[in-house]
Amino acid sequence: MRLEQSEYGYTQIVISDNCEFDDFYSYADLLKNKLQVNYLNRLDDFDTLYWTFLFDGTSFDLSYNVFLGINIYPSKGFRSSAEENELVKKLFEVVSQS
Image (cartoon, rainbow, N blue to C red; front, side, top):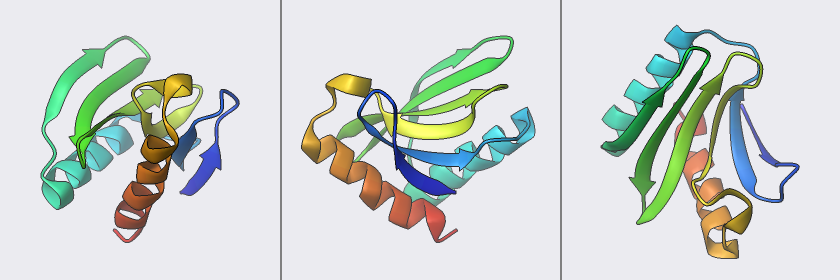
């Protein structure tokens, strides 16, 4: 697990580069149980999952892609504010301690 700047300029948590669907569901459960997040929107496709949740009042996406792995990033993507990108770091602190 690592924190990095995406090629589009927002901060993201890369949970795993190489994983399976089951790994995504494990992290989704971890976020739900540890942070009491509720998933507001779930987009499940053949090889991609995008689940939106709120953390500290900001919308984030937990995503899985068969080629890209599991990531967490602000839902606004490249339009994310500096404050939203800082919250990614706070979220990383919580998730990485699990």
